[in-house]
Length: 387
Image (cartoon, rainbow, N blue to C red; front, side):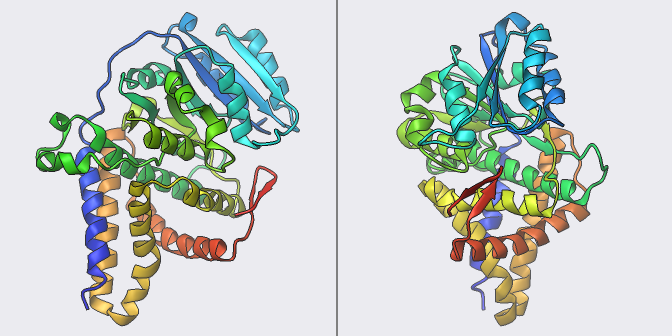
C-alpha cells in the first residue's frame, strides 16, 4: 500500500535539497584573462547573425577575447554570414569551414573537436548559432572558472521571437528551467561545506559524493588545460550528447568540479524546436545516449526519474490514494524548485506551464521508453544515429 511513497519520498528529498543548495551562489572572482568564444553552427542562417552581434557587444575587453566560428556542413548562407561578420567585426574572429565528415567523429562532436584543437587560450566559452547571449555573458561566465572548476554551465531560456506565447516554447523553457535548477542543486554539493545550507551542512561529507554530469552545451565554459588532460573529444568518442559526455569524462578521470550556476547575467536565450516532430527528436537525442555516459550519481538520479515518471503513475491503479499522494507530492516539490529558480534568475514561469511540464514529462518518458525498447534510430540535423 505504501510502496509508491518510497520513490516519491526520495525524489522529493532530492528536489528540496536542490532548492536549498541553489540559494547560495557558486564562488566567483573577477578576472581579465584571454578567452575564446566558440560557436559551431549548421544551417543556422535565420539566427546566426543575431547570435554573432550579441557576442560582439560584450562588456569584456575586446582585446582579451576572440570568436572562433565553425560552419559545419551548412547548405544555406550560414558560412557566408560568418565570413562577412569576421571581416566587419571589431572583435578578432576566425571562421573554419568544415565540408566533409570525419571518419571517427560526426555531427557537432566533429565541429567542436576541430574548433577546440585551434584554441590557444586557457578559457573557452561555448554557445550555439541559434542562441543570443547577454552583454555580461563572457565576463560573468569566466568569473566562475575558479582554479578547482573545470566546466561551468549557465541557464538557457527558450523564447519564440516570431510567435509570442508559443505553447511549445513555454514547455521547453519550463523543461530547461527544471533541468538547470535540479542540475545546479546537485552540482552545488561540490561547493565548500561552509557554503552549504545550514540544514544540510552536517551531511556534507556524504553529499559531496554526488557528482552529476548533467549540463547544457549551448551555455558552457571550459578550462582548456583540463580538456587536454583528459584527451579531449577524441577520448570521449562518438556521441549525440557531447556536452554531458565531456563533463562525465572529467568527473571520472579528475578531481575537478563542474559548476551549474544560477546567475541572471549568464543566461543564454535560444529558439524553440520548430514543431512537435523536432521537439520529439531532441528528446530522443538526449535519451538515446545517456546509457553511454553514466556514473553512479547519474544512474541513481535517472533511475529515480524513470520510476517517478513511468512507473509511479501506474501505481494509482493498485494504490489509488497513496499513488495519487506520491504523484502530487513530487509534482509540488518540482514546482517549489522551479519557483525558487525563477526568484534567483529574475524570471517567471506561470503555474499552468509547470502543470503542462509535469503532464508532458510523464507522457514523453513513456514514449521515449518505448522508442529505446524497440531501438528506433535517432534522426538529428539530417543525420541518422542508431540507438
